[in-house]
Length: 554
Ligand SMILES: O=P(O)(O)OC[C@H]1O[C@](O)(CO)[C@@H](O)[C@@H]1O
Picture 1: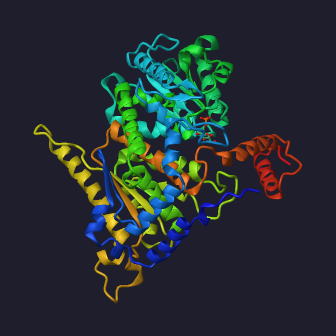
Picture 2: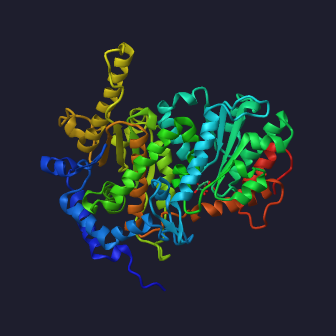
Picture 3: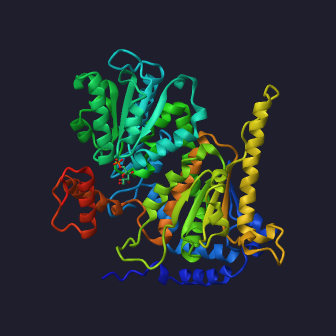
């Protein structure tokens, strides 16, 4: 029986509960009215600015959160993570995504072995693939250059590269012109089938991206892609080296699948799947934006790593973002969090964060294995803010559910020169409209009725309750460097929250059982249900059998 103290027994925790009770009954508009407070709630690091002034948080709450962070040992835990300590105890390993953005010459050892050279060696392999494809030297079985690259992966082996490629598409270098990058993840084959119709085998290259190289979704898509390729050119020994690259931590499994050594790019088990876009898993990003921009993204993340390591807690951006996250989810009991970028390029950023935050911190036992008695990760979702205004903001403004939000907006876009025509000016005005909407929504969420012309006879359906807290994140502009910063900011936010909640953010045991039961269900669909299959599922199996008319199922 563990004798360790639960976080919620700490006096610092109890103090925060008291403060939360006091602040919950105060209108958010009143808390936020003080201009001096607003000034103190805005923080900057280089081109990144975080404004917490619309949070239900005063100086005392913030100070108490910082005290809890000290008590939880956050400064030491940050050092531990960055220096390769075993911060993922259930899998017995470090979580060293930060090593992937260390510059050449930096020193870091894992189990006594230096890692920076290996990281850069892997990066050079990525660079060499990019160079061969961009220069049209990588040719398919007919001798024609590769024109389409398909990344087959799922979860962290898909979401990060996909999201980043969408966000930074306009940074594609001229060498990448004409090269199309596609992403396939879904297990049912729809995406792949739709895509294959549009591709020519002779000019298509597949990247099989899987940390474990066993994920059934990815392997099923990879096998179908291989069959499609073999229909065009049946000699697997000739075709695989020309049309398939593997990215994984498991060379043995890549070899068993048929990928030759020269087409394998490896990374390390100390890179978590959802933190892996900085590794060779980022190959599609590098193909899309070129190595110079990919390296700039790494440098942006490294900038934030240094800030995270060096800055005192009270002015440390990821720390503050994490503390505010814990404050909202745990102490103010806000169980939903929306991420709302006001820039179409960041459309897939919320889906990426959904995995990063919920797979990391959707936990209910502490690091000692004991059940915890407080709320951890809220449900996180999001969409481009201006589109979401016409979809789910109704719930944010008038629903019964409290929701905290992050509003994200690049400030500069479409800089004008005297050569630019009217269309360009129109785009700049559109960008300003997006910014205006971002500011408007955060005001209405905070202030509700008081931003509108509400009279005593105004009916209830026209009233806005306000009091919904939000953080505004401004980037000077969106480019590979600031984008790398933004992602690293959230990665470290997730770590900070996990330390305060005393949970391990680097494992994901919760997804394992579903994978095993899915294999049982494959058996059941093939007419071999386990004897202990529950009544509800037996009934569905019988229904499926009736619809397919093939007599399978129970
Ligand atoms: O890269 P892999 O090993 O195929 O895993 C894909 C994803 O599956 C998960 O393990 C969850 O099932 C994620 O953590 C991971 O990002």
